Image (cartoon, rainbow, N blue to C red; front, side, top):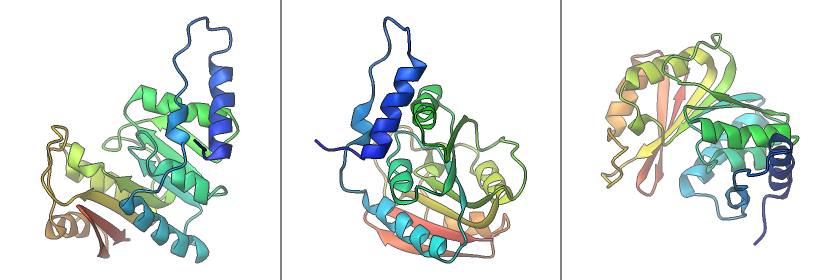
Length: 205
């Protein structure tokens, strides 16, 4: 099996630094860096980003709820010069990403934070991405208000488009739901793209 080489090597270096002298370290999570086909929703979002990066409109990006890196790692692969801040509420997810940073991925800043309450300065990022996040969070108004407060250009969102059996999914959004939510909280317009079983929306400031 092959890996996203520079990310896998950085993770290994950072892991070894973090656990130096530890006689019983946690297992390395190398499988997260295996080369595999990008998920359809990830491909769509990367396509949007390639366009706006080429136009000079995305040098700093905030990825909310980075989780296991299904979007973040292809993002870092495709845009090695982009300054990326990643936030997640789960400490073990942040630790995984901190190993990447410590191993040499200097453009990645991982933080443990809750997007609903995070007090980063206004307009800190060109783009905010929230893939498979909104359906998990009870207070969607708080998420959207803060994301819009933090961004200069675009918020990019993906959510499931059909019911599923994931008990952590507490919302199911229609296009109209998302449009209303983002327009009333300060976006000027939205655009939807079609992906099997998912909605991808770009909201413009």
